[in-house]
Length: 111
Image 1 (cartoon, rainbow, N blue to C red):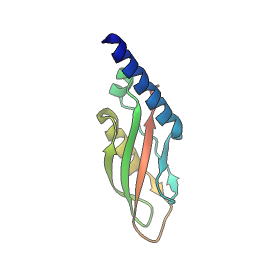
Image 2: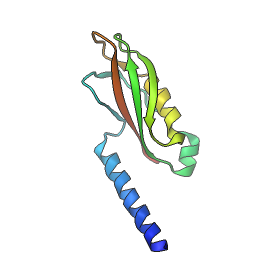
Image 3: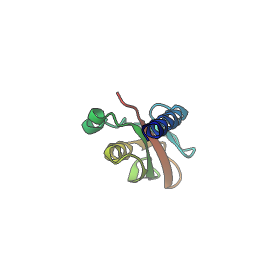
Image 4: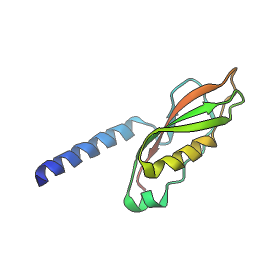
């Protein structure tokens, strides 16, 4: 029983490490719209104390002038999602012809 739990945890850690390695250190957007100003999310104290890390996916509706109209969390650890959504809400994108929807992934690494 202990051996199977250890094996599961090892596989989960390797999978999360490879997921984090596939991302850049801060974030990535899903479309061609460039980020003009990127705000780094504050790492929650509870997450630090509990050594919580992971990826949070946020959908951002971006106005034509580049400001973020709204955000919606698509997935991630509940301890990290508020910090991610708050940070993405402060981002500025390059202006474009119309409103766009951007999917952003933020990677939180234990410090």
